[in-house]
Image (cartoon, rainbow, N blue to C red; front, side, top):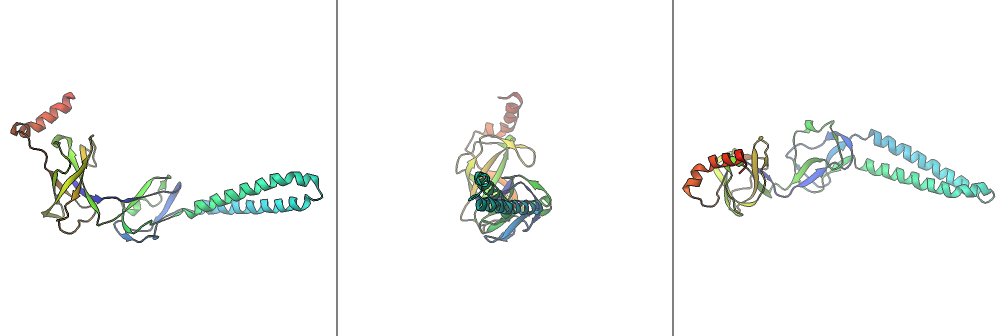
Amino acid sequence: PAEIVAASPFVVTAPIDAVIRQVVVNPNTRVKKGDPLVRFEDVSLRNRLEVASQEATLARARLKKYYQAAFNDPEAKRELRAALAEVQLKEAEAAYARDLLSQTVIRAPRDGLVVFNDKKDWTGRPVSVGQRIMEIANPRNVRLKIEMPVNDAIVVARSARVRVYLDSDPLNPLNGKVLRASHEARPSDSGIMAYELTAIVDPGNRETPRLGIRGTAQVYGEKAPLFFYLFRRPLSALRQRFGL
């Protein structure tokens, strides 16, 4: 299995712990830098900012009162330092609440194509700080992601030739070269153990394929004896069975 993926996408993550109210953009659409992408529920944060602002206002009023009375009242003079600390604390809390509220809208950090699943999967969903939501990719800078099942594994050298037959255009295969390969097999999206290969598309190919298109790949490894070619699957099965 093979898929056209972004070469160096920008990963958009949740800046705060919150519930997503709305995903503004649709999957696989172009955005400009500064465009809104995601809006979070902000009622509790607005209330938090309102309370913090009121407490800061009261603290400043209390400080002013002690400051005016400190000239004639020793007790007020002693309370002046505590009142100043209280003002600094409440103003810091208000600034923090204001900063959180400003992060309830995620905006595109750059131009590109937004890549994610269905909007309905995200609406009303709680997310944590750092959780991946979507990617912003350059549609002209793509790579080939290839999953090589363990049963079909061969020795793949860097720059090994690759040919990919896309489902959307199987009669015009893409040519490429292996850029890197994983050293360990992992469960793939289809539930099988596979090695992941990343390949670059040859410049001589036709127009850049669209992100997300899938297909089937042929990977050309090093030359091997005919015996190994004919019996590689049985040998692979024996290795997995007996841990050789």
